[in-house]
Image (cartoon, rainbow, N blue to C red; front, side, top):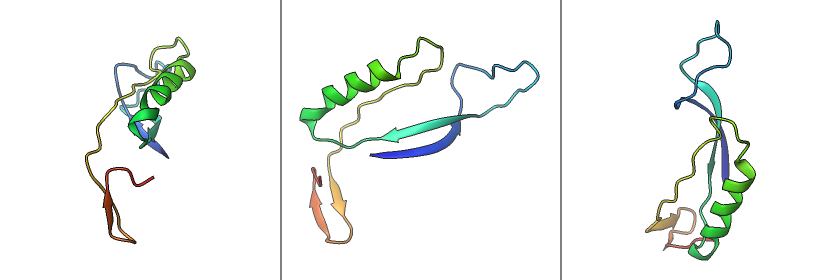
Length: 80
């Protein structure tokens, strides 16, 4: 899991009428997990991340077909 500070925009705008900023502060999470854990992680993020406010974010599930551990030169789908 990786958590990053970033800036971005979606359909929301700044809450301040006089403070127009094209990019707003965001958090980006990247989680790689075995297929068996994907539904649990997805449901948890959707439930806990939901505040009812516009701009709560988005969740995407993307297949990872191949990975490599640079230090050991190991190549595998699940590097755990």
